[in-house]
Image (cartoon, rainbow, N blue to C red; front, side, top):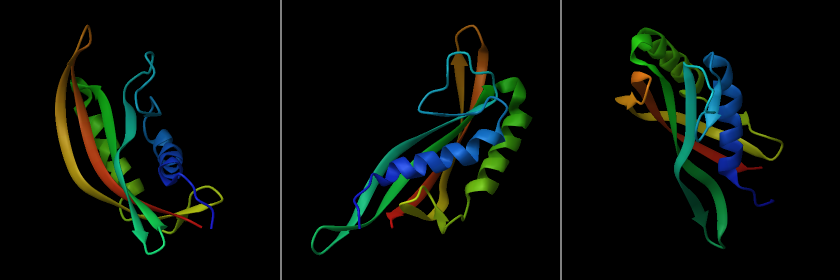
Length: 138
């Protein structure tokens, strides 16, 4: 079995699933400076490999942050997008991610709603969903 960077496969899967959920699209790491809200930003927070005897990696257990962002005046829209994100990701599994990996499980672990003062844009809200995603090379 080939060695791959499993988080890269999870990030590609998140991009494909999240992009259609918000009119401002989904962005890895940081949104484009001209991105129009509402938009989604996602990133890998941490990942741990499960290894067995012989240094064989079974899977990568990654923790991913998905953040729905927009002005506080759009709070109902942001909440609806957070609902759509959870419906798209929660309890998914057995999904091929690329030609060389499978996403075994995706499960939400935490949620937060954080206000943020954005210069010249007023107050924004960030609906944050934290997911654990297991990816295994095939």
